[in-house]
Length: 211
Image 1 (cartoon, rainbow, N blue to C red):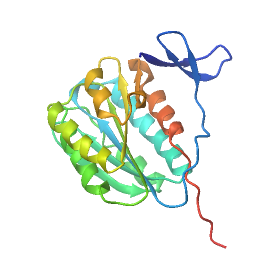
Image 2 (cartoon, rainbow, N blue to C red; image 1 turned 90 degrees about the vertical axis):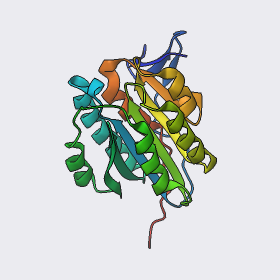
Image 3 (cartoon, one colour; image 1 turned 30 degrees about the horizontal axis):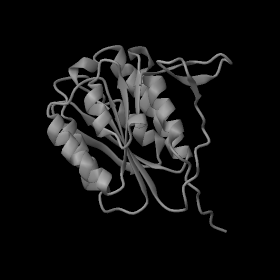
């Protein structure tokens, strides 16, 4: 089902389906139990992201980070083009993430497999709530190997979500994510808003306060 980010009839942010149904964006997802919550944001920096898309990705990554950290997550950042690079380990330091986001540049191919491999090595076997969010506008170099790694992560109860533009490979993404409704498909001009929306969908972590 096609879902686009838009303003609803009441002037509030909603996700609108191809059937015209409006689903509100709620910042109050069900809380997680006490413990650890880690999110990795994997950002497509391939050639197709040149121009406005990469600028939206930079701003969107910061929006995502602010919301995720506020909800109690540690956030790791991975960029991928012809290879993949871990820009920062999971952190709650927004200034560090802000500096790393500046390294986003659009070039070369779409090696999502390597990015997923890095995330898998960091998350598989770890305790707590773990989530991987893929932001992309294209098709991976090797869909088969990417899906194989994703399947291993899902077996280990790692949630996989996707934020994608309409020109991305939607068939592939529907298989990549943990559930088909966790692929948020947007117009190209809404890439930043989509990243912010996905962060709002993350459940809150119930933090244990020291006395």
